[in-house]
Each structure stands twice: as structure tokens, then as C-alpha cells.
Image (cartoon, rainbow, N blue to C red; front, side, top):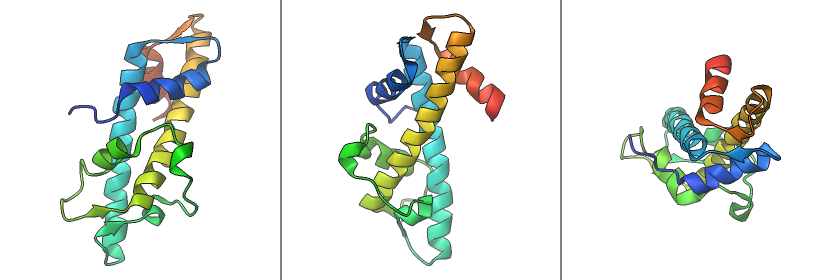
Length: 143
């Protein structure tokens, strides 16, 4: 599976959690892949919810979001998040703009949590750089 999410915004999310640590390109790639997989899974669940409600359009509420943030407040770009949402769902579904923004917000929070933990792991290992192994260690420990 190719990564739909550009690494630069993911790198930016890691850096805002890194403090004085550096960020390896492999860490950004590893987190982008994890974010993508999580987003596709959330979209599958949202599609089931929409189907249960008799709809073919995913809405923000299908992602558990009641208040949609402004698109400009997000680091993750909405177009790749839309492609992520469509990875595992049937082509008959539509993803509303509010749903795209809501999913981007959820995924950004997810990435922030992982990045914060990865920074802690890197510091614990007495390294100055967050590496892909910190991202993978987080998932080995907490998922």
C-alpha cells in the first residue's frame, strides 16, 4: 500500500511534540503509515454507521465528531485524508467535506498522541533523534 499522506505535515506534527529532539525521515514515514491505516479503519467504521442510518454519505458525526474545526487550523491536508478515507470503503460511499475535516482532526490528534509518546521513548533511550523505532515501540507497547 502506498502512503497517501505526505510526510511533511506528519513531520511537522512530530516536531511540535519533539521539543529539542530531532526527527528522522523514517519516523515521519512510519507515523504516516500508521495514521493512514488508522484513518482507513475509522472510515470503515463510519461507513457502517452511515449504512445503519440509511445513508451513503459519511458525515462528521460518523467519526464521533460533533463540532468540526476550521480547515485552516489543521496541519494534515484534507485531500490526502479524503483518499485515506476511501481506501477500504465501497466506491458507492461519498465522504462529505465536514467528514473529511473531522477525520483529519481525529487523525491529527492521534498523530499528536503517538508523537508525544515517541519523544518520551527517544528521551528515555537517551537519544537526540526520534526514530521510526520509537513510533513502532509505541504501538508494540500500547496497541
